[in-house]
Length: 380
Image (cartoon, rainbow, N blue to C red; front, side, top):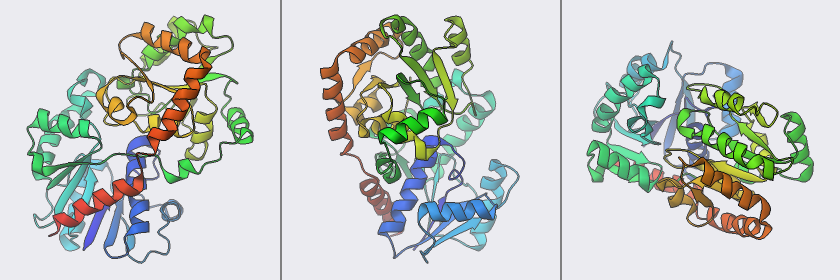
């Protein structure tokens, strides 16, 4: 069969969501030589397209084709450009995320990946224009989709509960750490190199991810402020681009506690450097109020860095007992656990070992096999 995949995120530095599609496609190229794949993007720059082919390792894969469909914006691409192409060049199954193309022929089966539905629980953190479209289009998407793929059992449950979606329509798979990340250079020389490249302190607590309000970063800053006098020469690094839906409370909280010399914001970390940046951290903290999964937790565990994460259900699902959990609304509790983990070498060593063991339960090979099985079953 012919499987269409929306790869518009690939090459645009959109962190977690981009990584999911990148790793699924890369694994498909390894395991599937039977089906034909059309990879749809709005990127038209030939150099970028060639890099995407190289990174996905599909340069010599005859059953993989990148289809570039230029457009003026993402809505016209989904509702006009793509559906016009698919009416003339139909695929059997089409895989996208969140919003489905509504006007393609019904004979084309559609699967959509839902990473989370945080906008329903924290609408105050979403731009009103984005919230408007999500509130209208997600229910329509869930009705149009033939299969809904959640990135965790928690997210599958949330979708079913909130939208009353038919359980038989939903499947779940787990995200994982990318092969490139696992193979990355984390030698002392590389760690020194990335510290110089991003102007990082020698000793630091780390957060890596988007800087959206639901990531709860001000609570991490407050916790660090409470703990810093007991942590000599330890700084806080908050890594991520100040892109869409940036949380202005980050700057406000840094200023409130006069932490301009203690909190480092290096911006977006290149993928090839991320593992070394994480490996150079004393502690990795992931304080989110809401997640669908939490790939950075697995990434930190894979390089042996102890993790303190908010005790929300998806984090407990993936990390189990391999990290320290805290109430995401309690900065004092987080502060106490930062101090404890910074000073207790035995606990640090135990969490590092537990984390490396736990991360082995996740792989893109297994997850992609599961996704492919769902797509193939849809075509029967």
